Image 1 (tube, rainbow, N blue to C red):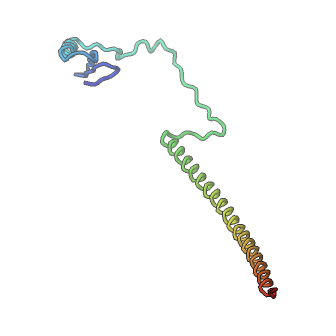
Image 2: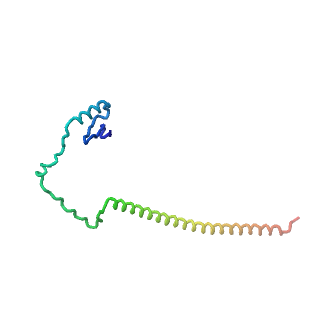
Image 3: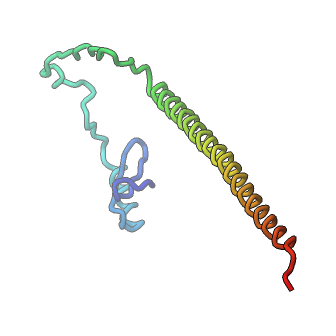
Length: 146
């Protein structure tokens, strides 16, 4: 038994028997017995007599589209799609690496600038400290008035 289109379908001796999906086993058995007892009826005649009435038409040859690649097979087109996706991913990775390298370069510039600013500030603080110490030294060398 196979469910197709919401119906129970049985195939026995080349006959297809179909009953409702909610049919009981008794109803299915009754339908199978009736189908087996009935003579086979061909739905399509072996000799298509009506085919002579149809005009003999040959399909027009396909014209290639200029610039288009010929489609060799379904598998080849899938492979081409996969190759294109892989190439796209590789290009995206390469672009991403280039962006990160550029950002790292900016960080290097920031590191250098930070070191320069820190050096300048440290020198300024040292100079100011030296000035304060020199001033204190002058005060300490002064004679005290009694």
